[in-house]
Length: 77
Image (cartoon, rainbow, N blue to C red; front, side, top):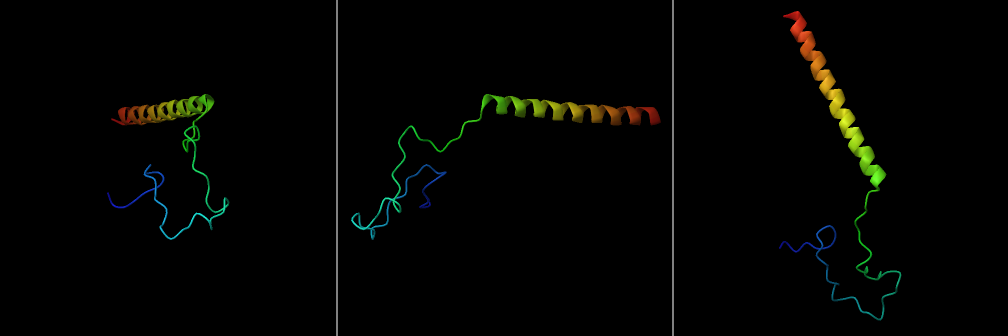
């Protein structure tokens, strides 16, 4: 579309036409990834549980703070 390619766009970039196959070495030209090797990293289930519990704790603390402010306002009026 705009000529953009590569990660994270999942559009493979073509090699420049000036590079010859005979002069490239394995260290400068990495092998392509097999379908089993993905760039995505999976989170461990314990990490997901930890994030979920932290979100719940954050919402609880926020709710308690809002209730506290409501009670202060209610007492003053």
